[in-house]
Length: 217
Image 1 (cartoon, rainbow, N blue to C red):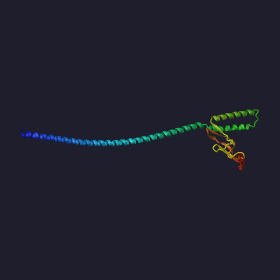
Image 2 (cartoon, rainbow, N blue to C red):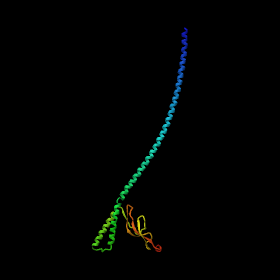
Image 3 (cartoon, rainbow, N blue to C red):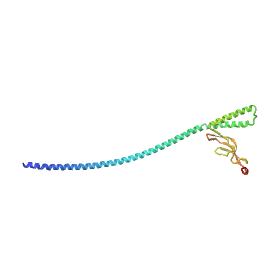
């Protein structure tokens, strides 16, 4: 074997060893780089999860706010609907108030006519006229009742400033104080709402208070 061939054979194992060492080094570096990349990916994933959790919480809070706003809007809508229904009902119940007020003087005149006719002769034409007025007054009263109109004739009742209008106070030893003695003009209500107070004369009671005390005793 020549010297050149011996040298070549000696160099080949050395080169192979160097190649193996270089490959191992490259694998090590690649492994280190891969580990670094994995760590970065894991860190990125952690940040993304935190952001998602924060976004989820913010979305839930926004949903709760929207729910509350929706509930408030529904409640307000119901209140508006109820008010509208009440207004409609009131309009139906009291839509005839103006007409009834215009007709009440006619009712007053019929009653005055009957009071004046009470002293007339029961015979002859006057009787027929009186009967006609009575029938008219009765028909008028029935119509008012159908329309939920109620007369207030508070003779003997305690004076109520909510429904009565006092024309005067009259001393009386027979009638207790603050009691309606005379009704000058009847009052009327429409569906329990006062549309005209009763005009009345109210007792002051006994001037010295002795008569009422004696009657009570």
